[in-house]
Length: 307
Image (tube, rainbow, N blue to C red; front, side):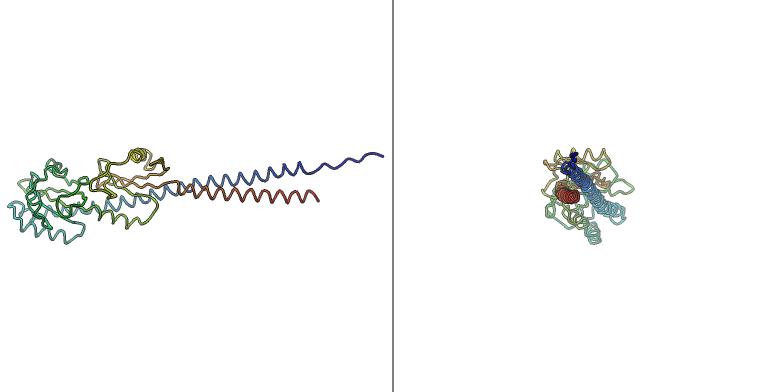
């Protein structure tokens, strides 16, 4: 009697099936995780770009609007006539009117061509008659007939807050009679930017033409841009406005937009760690689900093969 061949056991086939199914699920989970990480990073970049553009627009409108207002004020015949004869009372009345028309004018004053302040509003006797030839706005104004926006400094009058100054020459037919100077309190500008941008996990900064940070207001004087940030900003300016790299050993994204009124930049930064960590946690969940699904399908396959 011929021996009957025994049926091949399905166990090896089962293991092959298990490996194929589980591998397919894990590969799909890995690819989905990679896509999610790229999407998260792109979302952080897009958010930084949006906030940098918004901050640049707010600062540009705020400072640019004041510059135009200062130019119009300097052309007023009443002010020009008062400057010719050093009529401080008439000039102060005009400055009072200028401040009352816009709350953005925190303090305005007139200085002669050598930089000596002779009229201001609100009036501060501590600085009347004081020479400000050392201020950058004074040095620039003496060599130019254009509007000048200064770097950040701590003012001597008022509450001595950090400010930037807008200086405009007051000209008559006989030449420059004085310089009209308006000061922007940076904390007011900072509040304006924050109210428009709202809360988000990143940081917003504004730099001047010398690459010093005028916002945020953390100290009385402008702060030097940290080297990590400076390098990423320089790279962003070359690469279309965005770059990625480490800031204080934290992987971050940087977006920059020109602020023409200041000659500087609006800079938005955000750490990528939060978005990447969330993406990686989701990837791990996908992978675990894929493993469970792979085992479940393989077990079902084994049961079918056993029948």
